[in-house]
Image 1 (cartoon, helix red, strand yellow):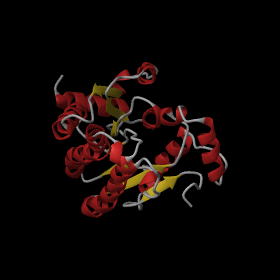
Image 2 (image 1 turned 120 degrees about the vertical axis):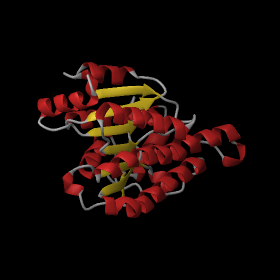
Image 3 (image 1 turned 180 degrees about the horizontal axis):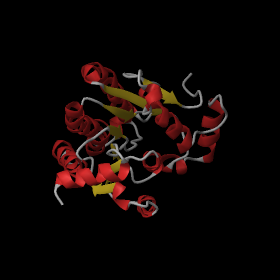
Length: 261
C-alpha cells in the first residue's frame, strides 16, 4: 500500500488523521502512564527504551488496533544524534507527522561527584540531557513543516532545589529547564509550544527501594502529607498538552505536593 493510500485510509477510518506522539523511555513507570493517557486520547504513540516491558506489551495487546503503539529498542546513551534522527524519520515515514514530543527518558544517579566514575557521569548526562536535545531537534523538523506542535520536557524538582548526592542529575535536569525556556522563544512564532513538568517524589521504580525512614521523612516534609502518584503527574500532563493550556509555553510546572514551596 502506498503512503498516500495508507494516509487516505486513516482519514476515512477516523475522519481525520490521528495525532502522533513520540515518547522517550515509555516502557514503565511514568512513561507508561503517559502513553496510556495518550492512547486514551486517540493518539498514535511511538516510544523507545532499552527493553520492552511486560506493561507495554499488555497495553498494546489491550488496544483494538495494536498498531497505534509502536516500540523500538534504543539505548539513550548510544549515538543520540543518529539514533534519534533515524527513529523520528521512521515514525514520519509511517505516520506522516509528529504532533507531540515527550522527553521522558531519564536515569537516576546518586553518589558524591568526587567519587562517581566518569563513565557513570557521562551516561547520566547523555540520557538526561543530550538525548532530549537531539530528539527534540529531530522532532522539530516535522513540527515546523506542519506549523504546530508541542514539546513536553519531564524535569525534576532536583533542577530547582539542591540535594546532596545528585549533582549531575540536577545539572542535567536544570539544563532541560533551560532548553524549555529558550526553545519556547525560538519556536513559538511557528506555533510550537514547549513546556516542562517537574515531578517531586512519587511512587515509582526509582523510589520503590527507598528506605522506610527516608519515605517517612519525605512525607513529613511534603505539605500535602504523602508522596505523589503517577496519576498526579499524568493529570497535570493532560492539562499541559490540551487546548486549555494553549497560551502556556516556556514554563516548567512543579507537581510535588508542596515539597519545594
